[in-house]
Length: 187
Image 1: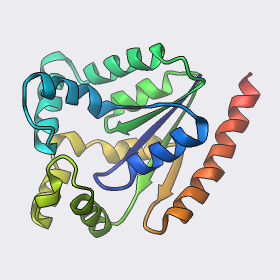
Image 2 (image 1 turned 180 degrees about the vertical axis):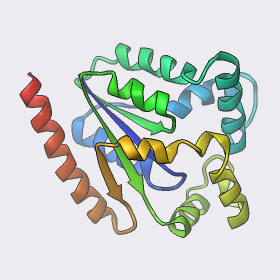
Image 3 (image 1 turned 30 degrees about the vertical axis):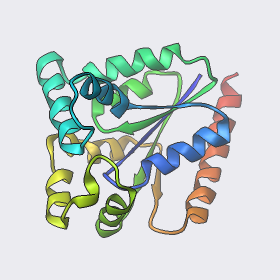
């Protein structure tokens, strides 16, 4: 099995990358945030970024920094696909869990701050469409976002996503070829 983890700051384009790779490989994607979303739903709380951040921090404080990573590892193990794409790697423990699989990669997605802010306004997810730029910057410095630079430092690939979809997809195709070459050499 090949496990591809996707990381990056808020609004960098992680979900676009995951969708593209999932379609390319014909596999489903897993999202770290789905674990938290399941709990928020059960608690009848809205799936807004602030709630995701509070819940993630609370779980890590109560059960250890790797609690969400452990849950995701079990989800990955249950997947029967040859390639698994995992969205939202934010912590070193999550990156290390991805790297614990023999054939694994982390792709870090980057974009300029203002580009990312504008994307969050337009996508209308997690209550972000009403955020001011100041609130966006505060959200980006929350506890759940503090380790992302460390994840970038250990990423196998870094993709700058400030241009068109075609440019992004072209770069992802290049990365995909390297991943497939590596996968073939292991088999």
